[in-house]
Image 1 (tube, rainbow, N blue to C red):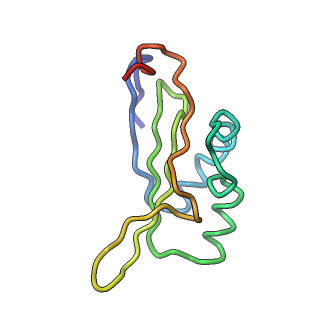
Image 2: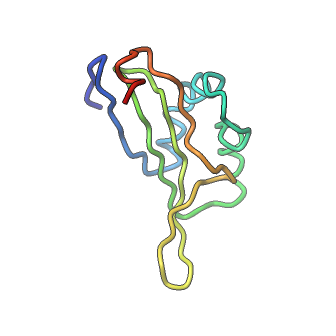
Length: 108
């Protein structure tokens, strides 16, 4: 993964449950820093949900400032009426995010 500068936000798309598991420790640390997060966005819930429902295609979008995870969206793609639908995974309905340590980034 390329590194981000202290004032730059970097994103990366995760394309598998294994990718989600790779960032699980950071995701667990991010969760309590996100005042609007729901239990449906916690990695413990999402991993149980993925095991139970076995979605065919999961996607995650991580947002980093420098090397620190400051945002994460867990998504899935499914078929409905011949169309591909992108939705939040696990019953979640928002992206979890924490404030940046850099005031200049928070003003964007």
